[in-house]
Structures are given as C-alpha cells and as structure tokens.
Length: 520
Image (cartoon, rainbow, N blue to C red; front, side):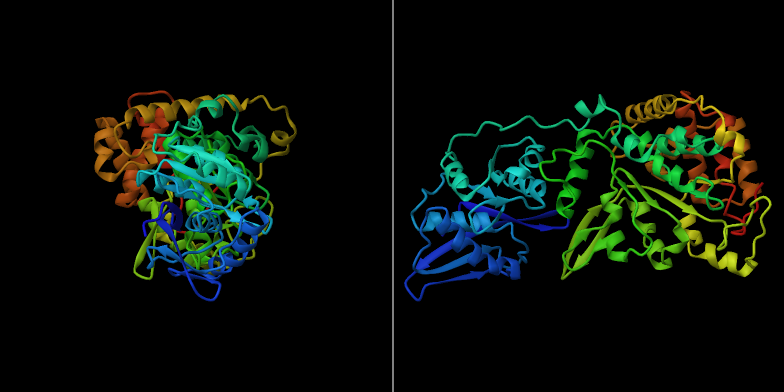
C-alpha cells in the first residue's frame, strides 16, 4: 500500500525519506517492524502501544506489520515513534488518512507526550526537496523547522495534538507557518554573544602584534598559530578571535544549524544559529570526535566549527595522527566518511587556531628563565604538528610575557575599532566574491589568486626577496599573497601595497626553515 506518513533517516548531514507503511491482518496480536530498524526503533512498538492507549485511542488487536521503506537504509533512534503511531491509527481507521503526504518526527513517552529529537532541520529539508509541504514536529523543534521557511510546520506536544494536526493536511496548498529567519537580520543588530562569553580582544593587554594578527586572521578567514611561554596570553587570544567575526549570512546559518541539529547539540526551542560557532575540544578527544564518524556517524568538531573557529589549545598535546587528519578538511572544506558502501558528507570550512608552548618545559625564549629541554626534545615536540599541517597555517605569531606596565596601566583601546575594521574587510570581500562559492580571501583557490590579488612590480620584488630569504613553498607563496590582500582589505585599500606584502611575509617567517624557533 502507498503510505502518506513519512519519517526521516539521517545520514551525515543529509538522509533519506522513510515511508511508514502499516498492514493489519488476522493472527496472534503483536507488532513486527521490518526495514533495518535498530534496537531503539524495535522498542518503539511498546512505547507506541501504550502511548496510543493512554491518548484515548485503541491499539489494534490484530497482527501489525510495520514496514520502514526503503528497507536497505538503517533506521536509528526514537524519532520514528510519532510517524509510526500516526500510521497505525490511520491503518486502523481511527484517524482519517491525509490527502497529501505528511512528514512527522518525534519521540513518544508512555503518556503520549511528544519530545524533541535531533535532525529536524535536515528532515524538513529532505521533505521539502521531495515536494512535501506538511510537517509535524515536536513543539521544542518548531523554531528549528521553521528556519527553512517552507510549507506548513505544525508543532505538537502530544499524540492527540498530532492527530488534530493531521486533519489540516488537505489537498490545498498550505500557508507558510512562519517567516524564515534571516541569519543576519536581528542578529546583526546585536553584539556577538561570544564577546560576552569569551571576552573582548582589548582584554589582551600590550601584545599589539598579536592583536593585529588576530584582526588579520578574522578579516580573511586565515588559519593561525600562536606560540610562546605559558601565561603569555595564547589561549586568551585564541578564544577572542570568534568575537571579531560578523553574523552569518542566511545560507551559512542554515548549514551551521543543520549540522548542530544532526549532532544533537542544538538547544531545545532554538531557531537559526546566526553567529559563527566556536569549538575548543580537549586534547584527549578521539579522531572520530574531531573529524567525525563513529558508530552513529555523527559530525565531528571540524564540522561543528563549520563557518566558525576551531581552537586546539596546546596543539602538540593532541596525537600526531589526529593533527594530520586535519589537513584534508583544511584544504577541501569538507570531510567524507565512508560506511558500508555509502559516503557521508560533512561540511567543515572552519578557521583553525593552534596554540603551543615553544618547548616541552615552556621556557624556550623566555627572559630570565632557563630551558631544560634538549634540541632533540624540542624538535620531537614540534614534530607532532608536522610540516604538512604547518604549511597550511597562514599566520604564525610568537608571544612573550608582556611587561607589568602593560598589564597594570590604563586600557585606551576600544573593541569596536577592531570590529569595524574586520567587518568592513568582510563586506569588501563579500562584494568582490559575490558570484563565487567562497567569500573570504583565506578560501581563495590557487587558480584565482592572480586574478583577485594583483601585485605591482614593487610588490613582486618584495615578495621575491621574502621568498628567497625564508625559502617558502609554493603554497606559502599563495598564502602570503592572500594575506597581503586581506591586510589591504583591513586597511580599506583597493590595491595591495609593498607594506601589505612585507607584513604578510612577517607572519610566515617562523617554522618553514627550522622548527627550532628563536625569537626576541
């Protein structure tokens, strides 16, 4: 029989529509669920049976067969409770069959109440792409489902509410249930929530070079390494970068919200996530936790930081294989995880910030302190990062302990000065790349560097001298050129000048020749 009740089987950040078909036949009363259900789905037959009875309906006294189609797709989780209960009520004649397809997602408790589930935005997206226009979701997921701005989204608190909502599914085109959030709109009128939670850039006292580098990184989406002795402000700097970023455009906000919805990290009753995400995992995290995958095929930290910032504090403490696994998502902007002949696609266009001590003991380069590490120990410490990963880091900034006067003196800087410069640079880049899939200089493909980063003869000579002196790779050459373009944007200049090239070269002077760094 043709089903008009649908659920959703997430796979990566996409998934498949699942038709819930119910057949009633004579025989010993019982419920059989077929179509590759996991334990949570098989257990739903008891939850659904009791929820139907406690909601004032009758569970059929027949042999009930539930088919979840397509049968070859694994069905995982409790989100099938609601569509399964509705399909049973329709098959038993207690609820009129809807005239149009209805997608439903939600977990039932024994009293018939509907609880929120993860992946609602992905489910609504898949339903809309299939031409469906009626969506029954838990009330706690309604704002999330309405973010897409398609069809009629009906929030329900109980199975009884869902049955009443089914009656509205007529052949007539539904009215949109809510205006789609902009992703910038109201968010653009408010300060970034990260500024209150993680602090302002002006909390960093002294360290003018570090703050300038943070502004450049934020302005162009460039990856960054901050290294120096303990207590010099590395972690503070890494945590304040995300507060410089502007709100997300609508399409990026949808992508970020969808990833967090699938991961189950979206708060209940949350709408569109309008600001860049910030993630800072502990160094004991597993490869699946960082890159994604695992038994349930969930997005990792690199995807949860999509269009935002991923901070790896004390980066050499992370395992070397884990750090090297970051190279592909840094380059491609996505992660593909293969499971059982299928490939899950996880977007991961994040901005990486690494912090590190200069050596295992932390005293290398520190004034009035002795480093007790041997050269071999220092090289082994930095070897964890590896040249291939380090070559993808555009900005490397050494820091040292600021003098007491900088910490105790008056702070005359205002964070809005940095914000206006960074946001202005973003607007210049959005306008420049409005017809392309990328929008920041840090994501500029190598084939487009010559087109968008035009250098004059003076600037070319500066670049050649810097390349010869620092022995930079071809990737580093493009990195310096893109950094020069970002610095020009940050300064409000249409043309890249020699000063911009020289500043960009300074950010690449550490790490490409000898990992044993010496600095003042």
